[in-house]
Length: 311
Image 1: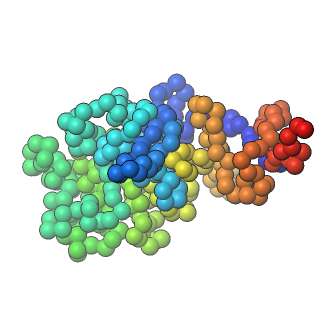
Image 2: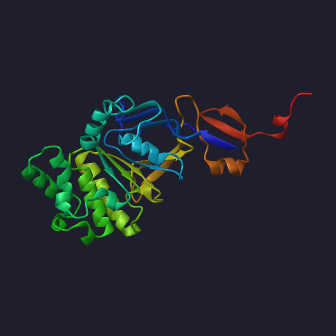
Image 3: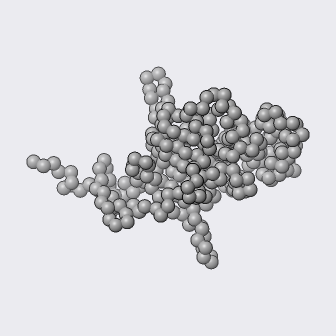
């Protein structure tokens, strides 16, 4: 028997009561069509992210997490459902507005450093480029570039080109580039996927400091198993939907470390995904017996007697 307890609050960390979510995805679908084949990448996904939150999305390959990130970045559009970032509805926004959105309202960091930086420009010049394209005076762009590079710990290396820096340093420059036009949202797709654990810690430390100091909302897609200790909340995806959430909390007792609460995500239709290892352990197949037991729901495997049909 598995008991599923309702959390005391389903509100994301950092979300004030009554405040609308900064990112709101509701019943989101994305279908890719190639010739006669249709691939459903997102299947009615629901997600809320609070303004100023730093959270991560994890999941196996094909779970839909990168598709979701591309939609939030304005690089792809959903097939159906609702997705808003701030006051902007990304489902109905036209292409001209999406270009503006990508330039000034969202920053993006790719896993491959070659996609983030122009190789023949210095770190400082790379950070200046997005601002110059937006028409900012060159002296203002240069001053902000210097400030951002100092914030990511690379002030003394601003004259170096990408091939003169380590992988971790390149990713920190990429973060500065993504924040050049002061967007309220930063998206990162496997930002530490090509880095060793020590360097990954440095990059996550920079992201946490920027989240704290600039109040920028940060959403990270990652396979990093240590991510639960680095962000406020982890949302796991499976089969194109959110399945579970891990919420980090701090216990204010001497010597206590931050703990993690795990919740199954319940969508607006009442559906939830039970973790696969629970299903395997309990030998639950296509059907399960569900019973209300006080303050929780019990999920039991279908018994042999349950499966019998009346004669």
